Amino acid sequence: MFKINSKEYKAKEIDFNSTVEMKDLGGDIYEMGRNPFAVIRAYLAYCGDMTADKAGEEINAHVVGGGDLAVLSEALNDVLEKSDFFKAMVARARKAESDAKA
Image 1 (cartoon, rainbow, N blue to C red):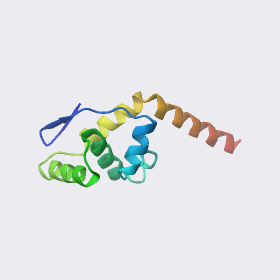
Image 2: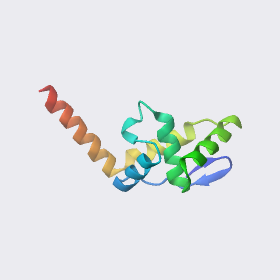
Image 3: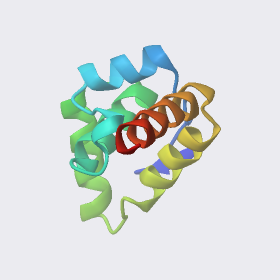
């Protein structure tokens, strides 16, 4: 659970389908390093069953009201660390990178 603007959201798990859904919402988790705001916005939209624009408005109000993005990024990082799908994808990417260097 995480709270944005006094509303609690369930931190939904990340699997194949949620990865695709988040990309459709404008946030590719594999591009987190290049575009973290889009991924965080997509994750809130996914967890809150809202549009990406609505999630952006919620995040904007949260920050303007004195909040920070740490609550969202921590929630996302926690579910990524627990995601068997994400761990498997990272392991494959690392192996491919290692094989390419060999």
